[in-house]
Length: 236
Image 1 (cartoon, rainbow, N blue to C red):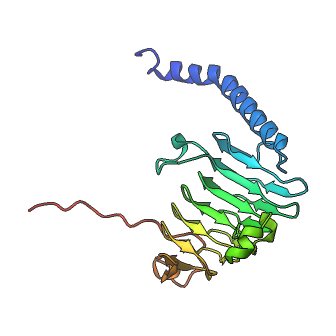
Image 2 (cartoon, rainbow, N blue to C red):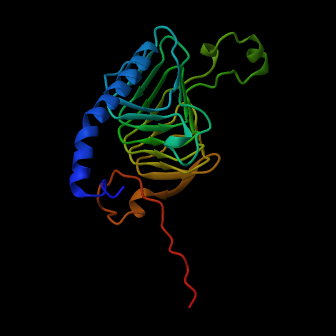
């Protein structure tokens, strides 16, 4: 240990392990790329980072597009908030599209019968879900006669850029969430959310504005506000 702590030995050790680390990441990225391509995902080599293996169910003729910068966390080691199950990406009809660009998803489910799209720098918190379909008809008689999810009501779900969706959120069909909006943990989102709007609750309602929570209210900031930090009280 004393030898390793010396500057010259540290530099030597870094030089020795550098090619092995490069080989490790090359092999890992290749395995991830081959897995995604085998599942029918449209992506490029090294564009997607996987923590664990996601569950991908792709209907023939549909499209799942993962663009550069996407991270899918499917195991608890990748998120201290706790991941209940692997990331699930499922297209339910031949015309369905899931398109993710430069976003992060932890243990969440995305089911698309029409289209689900998430923009760059957006995040989907642990165990959240996005469904662009009702899956079943509301009327009990029609529900008994239903033979496919295609017969249920559907509408696209679009998340803009820099959107933050906290843990255990459910986003339902027809919702559009504007850039830099924030959705509180445990919310059920049934209506569209304006850019910079903060919503929470079941159903999710307006509770604030991102620009009023930042130090630069007049700036066009596109990042969600950080969680408040409280200092421990000191007894005098």
